[in-house]
Every structure is written in structure tokens, then in C-alpha cells.
Image 1 (cartoon, protein in one colour):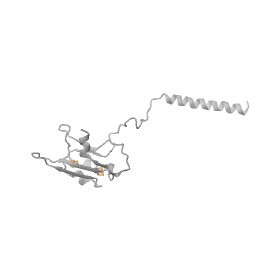
Image 2: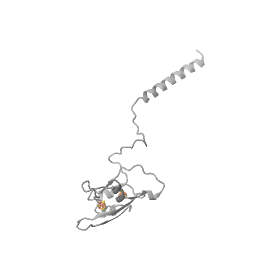
Image 3: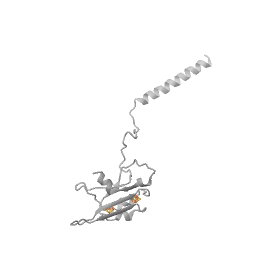
Image 4: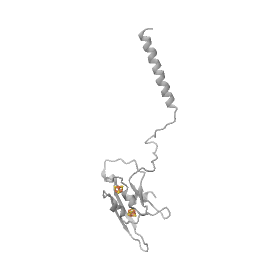
Length: 146
Ligand code: SF4
Ligand code: SF4
């Protein structure tokens, strides 16, 4: 057999092997996430920026503006304020600003909170070239979430 036909047969065989692998993989279930069309499911331990949590019964923030998280933050990311409504024993948070540009997601703020009023969010899709887009008003965000 000439070299020419040896090459043709070898090339065809290799082509058929390649096509058979492609066909086999084509009918296998998809295991990769179709981002950005599918919203990824974050793992339980995923750390997005911190978020205020609300009391499910009252619908109000659990935060009593004690300031422990602000003092515990090593990066000085948190600025907050609160006021005590008339007749109430505890303060309610009126302002909670997170500067996410310097947050290291260390979790000290969450650990320091005795009221379980903050937690990491599942926010993964943050992209901006503007610094202002990483300054979060967490009271406003909580209200917007309903
Ligand atoms: S420690 Fe908890 S309750 Fe106190 S200000 Fe921070 S989030 Fe609010
Ligand atoms: S996660 Fe750490 S760095 Fe970020 S706000 Fe909380 S304490 Fe500060």
C-alpha cells in the first residue's frame, strides 16, 4: 500500500474516533453552570458582603445599633447610627453604611453581633469601575428587599 493511502486510512480512523467522542459527550447531561443565564446557587459558606437581617415576625431590622460590629471591624468599613423610639426599650438602626472597598470578609462583625442581626449575603455579581458602587446603604437595601 502506498504512503498516500496509509495516510488517508490513518486520518479517517482518527477523524472517526474524534467524532465518536464528540457524539458521546454531546448526549451526556450538562454539568457546567450556564452562567450568566442560570443564577448560580451559592454554597452555604459563601461570603458576599454583609447584609442586615430582619425579624421575620415584625419585618423590622434585628439590629439595635449597639455598635459592636462597627468596633469589631478591623478595617473600619462600618458606619452606623440608631435611635430609640418613644416607649421602646431598644434602639433601632437608622443608618448602616458598609464601605465594601476595604472589607476583607473576615466575619468579625458577624461574630461580634449578639443579636444575629447581620450575615454574609449571597451577592456574587458585583462589577463596577466606580468606587461609589461599593458603598452600600444596608438599611435601604433591607427596605428594598421588603
Ligand atoms: S452588633 Fe449587631 S445589633 Fe449591634 S450594631 Fe452591629 S449589627 Fe446591629
Ligand atoms: S467582614 Fe470583616 S472587614 Fe468586612 S465589614 Fe465585617 S468586620 Fe469589617
